[in-house]
Structures are given as structure tokens and as C-alpha cells.
Image (tube, rainbow, N blue to C red; front, side, top):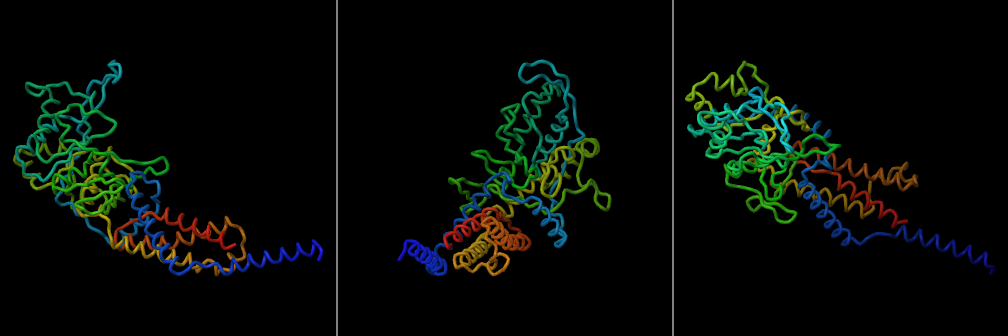
Length: 417
């Protein structure tokens, strides 16, 4: 037998062995089951960790926006804020002298919220003490002082005293500012929103940042005695697993200035309240109300459902806590687990639907197979995810599950060859 003949037979034998190996490759049923279980658990854990990231790296904001629009059209949800009093301070401004923060040189003047009006309203509220809660969404930043007097003391000092002594109140604080007076620090909480260069819409709200509470969490703690605790990468609330930065669903738009009958949906602090009503009348207006004081015109943020005032976004985050939307929904988790388990079983059993399509079977490009696999798995999970959003009001990013199944499927395809 010549060397050429031996080489020919050896090549023929290797090709046949490769074909036999490819045709006979199949994991054992028990192995398929436990690997599918572990894969599903891994995906759920990673998705949980994603829901604790304040930035919307993995969220399809445009898709969420369309889903929420459809849901609102189908459900025709009604406003549920009859116990809320919105107070606008956008038109209650005052000019103060402003100096360079580093060198102290005079720069001119800058506008701040009229603190004498804030003092007047909070003094009335404190004396009445019949409101539910006050959220004061105003920046009291060092370097922006009002040096005018109110009686025998400065306006700022009088305002800070009434804030410090007012019950059931929280004031916005931010990581990039220094509070002007330490006496009101116990009354402050963080109220920062996070976006990225590619995702400028607010989608997620962070309740706990390190040891610092957000405004929404402080309200929840003060009114209900509940909070969120961190345990490594996991979070709990009242002993139940929860999310720290969940998707913030905003079911209703912020109300227009007037309703269909011409009634005001919110008050301007000066012209609509202090200049019109007596102290007793204002006390009656705020009775049993959750009072949101903020700039409803200019202090607006881009969300997945449009531009909304900051204090309204924070209030929705608070209501989400009250309604338990931060808690892990185990029914949703089980449905997701079953979905991932079925996909895993199908993948490891070599029963993918796309393999039965002639155009895919005949195409040899690994890149094309990867893209088609990604689309097929993503399509199934996207459909299920959208249905769960409509039925359960729950969301979950399909980014990691899609990538995971596509990568594993590609690896298996190479093993089979």
C-alpha cells in the first residue's frame, strides 16, 4: 500500500469519525436538567444584580416608553393623588449677591427661592401640625445666603430654625453640594438621579447609596417605620429580598395647571396661597396632605415617559415603596425561571426551532448563526417580558439572558462540529 493510499484512507477515517462524533453528540438527560437549572439560577442572580445598578446601562428606554404608552391606553388608569398637595415655587424668586466660591470675589447677583415665603409657609404648617408629611425640594447650598433680616435675625437663620423644629419633613440634599447650615442636616436626604451619555432618561431610582438614604426612603421610614438594608450585593426590606434601584414605573402624568373644571391642580406658593388665604385657611388646606414643595416648571427631568418635575418623580419612588414594588416578586421570578429553564433544555437537547429552517441549516457562517441565535432567543424573551409588564407591572432586562444563551449556543455548535 503506498503512502498516498494510506493518507487517503486515514483522511477518510478521520472525516467519518468526526461525522459520527457530531451526530452522536448528546448530553445525558440528567446532565441537561441540572445544567439548565444552574443556568436559570445564574441568569436570575445576574438580573437581580442588574436591578441594583442605578444607571440604565442595560435598559431599552425607548421600548419601555412604548410599552407604558400602550399600557396607559389600555388600562386608562386614573390619578390617585387626592391626598397630595403640590406647591410650586418657580415664581417665588429673590436676587442675592453672589461671590466666587473659591476666591470670594463678587460675581454679581443670582436668584434663589424666596426664603421669607418658605419661612412663612413652614411656620404655619408647624403650628398647625395637621399635615401628613412635607417634602421640601429646595437646595440650601453653602455660598447662596440671603443676608436680609426677618425681625431681629437673618432670614436664613429663621428658616433653618423652623425646618429643624418642624416634624415630618425632609429636605433635598445632593452629593455635589455642602448644606449651608448643619442644623438642618438631620432633616436632609439624598435626591440625586442618574443617567448616562447614551441613556439620558431617568429609568431607575436609587433608594440607598452607601449609608445614605434617599428622600423617598426617608419618607418611607418616617411614615411607615420601614427601610432597606444592604447585605453585600443583596438588599432586604423587612426581612424580604428587594431591589435597591428598581425600574421606576410612573403610571400617571403630572397634572396640568388646571383640571377640566377649572380647578387648580397645584398652588403657586406666593400668589395662590400666602397672598390669598389666612393662616387658618392654609391650615385647613394642608390638613392630612402630603405636601410637595418644589419648582414644578424649571426643575424637570427627562424620564422614559417625558419631562416630569423632580419632586413628582421622588413622590412616585416613595409610592413604589409603599406599594411594595421594590420587593422581589417571586411569581415573576418563577415564571422567568421556567422560561430560562425551557430555553436551556431546548438548547442543550439540540431542539432549537431555528435549526429546522433551511436557510439557516445551509449557512455556514458562525457570525450569522450567532446573530440569528441572539435574535431568536431575544425575541422569545422579549415577548414574554412584554406580557409580564402588562400583566404584572414587572420588568426585567433581557440583555444578559440573550447574550448568555447565544454564547452558550455558539459554544455548543462548535463542540458538535
